[in-house]
Structure formats: structure tokens, C-alpha cells
Image: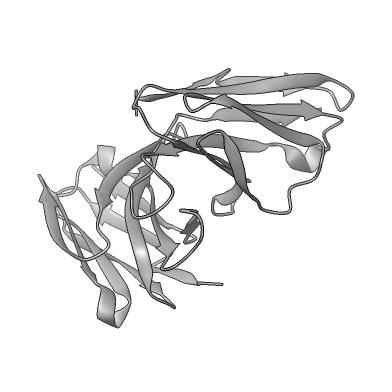
Length: 111
Length: 113
């Protein structure tokens, strides 16, 4: 099955810093989503981005489907950005829309 | 994600108990999913339902029994669970089962004594 790798596994930032999170996947995808899981376990949709670039406030994401990777940019980080960031993909041609999740990037933003 | 509601938020049960988790979506979607997130592990798909029909069972033990009476409701019936079943159980929905984003509920944190 498709493999999803995220890097870095852990990241510590000072408030106001910028960061880039990476997601590599091993095969063609028809779905790619970025999520933020807060300390209470809530999984928050950030982007649905199987290809192209999107921006939402301080966050933006780019997926280069032909090269099988996606990037999540966080600018001017805040303490509320802390948590785990997951990339999840749906396999192209799959019979169902099941998402395969990466192992996540644990982000801690310090004041 | 207020469009997908899960109850209860927390559940503690003994290994001999029977309980059910409930998921309801208010987004008009046709596909619903159960995922399990164990400590220090990524989310793993358990079941997929499309228009009330189960389309995927990811080799889940029979002590977990899903039920989808309609496209808006999804249940996970639990019986004789094991301590290793303690985890966060997340429900999701999407308009259909391909090329559409999934929206997640807040999850039920389950602890097995």
C-alpha cells in the first residue's frame, strides 16, 4: 500500500518564527489533506490539496503531485499552533476514499 | 468540526461491558468512516460506509461491530474489549467515497479497565 512519511517528526519554535513541514508519499493520490490535532485530540481540517497551492491566513500548502510531496508552511507561529500536524492521502484508483495518515509532526511553539 | 458530532466524548468501561459509540453528521454526506488512534500511532481506518453499505472492513476484530442505519448516523458497538483497545475513536464523513475531503468529529476517548 501507499506509504506516507512526514518530516521533521518534532519541531520546537519560538513564537513568531516560520516553519515548513513536509509530506512525502509513495504513489499517486486523489486526495491529500493536512490536519492539525490539538492537545484535546480534535482533528481540524487545514487544507484539502491533492495538487496546487492554497493559502488560509498564516498557513499555506503546496502539493506537487508529480513529485509526490506536499509542504505546509506556517508563518508567524503562535502558541496556539502547537499540536500534531498530520498529512493524509487517498490512494488514486482506490475503491474507497480511505485516508492513509502519516506519523505526524509534533510542533511546540514557545512564547 | 461541528458538522460531525460524536458521543460520548469520554468512555470508561470494563472488559465485560457492552457500550456503543455514536456519530451523527449534519453535512448531507453519503460516506462515513470509523478511525482508531492509539497512543503514539497514526490514525488507522477501521470501517467505511457508503450510502449505508459497508464497503471496507480493515481486518477489525469482531468485538467491534459497526452499524449504519442511514447516511447521517454511524454507530460502533463494543463488547468484550481488551485493554489494548483503549484509544481515541474518530468518525468522519465525506460527500462520497472518492476525491472528496473528509470531515472529522471530535472523537471518543475510550479507556478499557
